[in-house]
Amino acid sequence: MSLLPPIEIESELSYAYLHAVAAQAGMSCQVSERQADKMGVDAIIRAKERFAKDSIFTDLALDVQLKATISKPKRNNNKISYFLDGVDRYDKLRSETVTPPRILVVLFLPENQLEWLKCGEEELSLRRCAWWVSLKGAPPTENTSGTTIYLPENQYFHPDRLREIMTRLSREEELLYAG
Image (cartoon, rainbow, N blue to C red; front, side, top):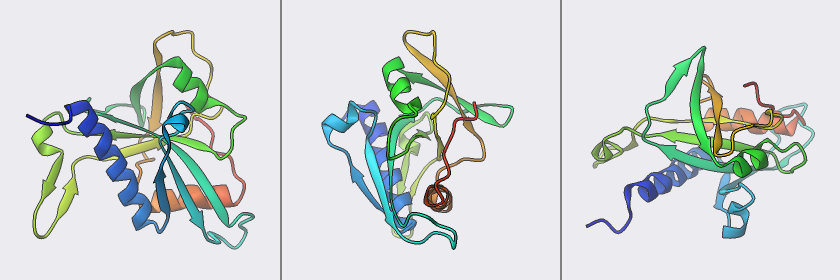
């Protein structure tokens, strides 16, 4: 019998994914305290670097809300839909008055739990991938249980994309929701 139920394993794998991407990008990743989770923050990524010649900031932080699902990504018009449970979490992620910036990272895992992680002498691999989105500036919702958000298909979360996000932040560019 497993100590963790599958939904908790999904969650832990999303943390592992985030840590691996941040490490490969040369950044630190720290799991947030329980109180920060109530603010919509599961982890904080930090970087200290001049990302571009025109960088304004060189010491950066990015708050991350993590989600994991075995639902197959539903694609439409170059976007992936995902139902985010909890209007309060949605409102925290779409807030325009928070710093550091916040993004949502959604890891889509295979339906079959045996396919989530493969380990061997030559390789450690986590199946499927995660996408990211900023919900800053997203519209309010009338729904009371949650809302469907749209992750751009080209915003899969990997080290190069994380470096692009930090480069934008270093230039004081906002990450806005494009819905």
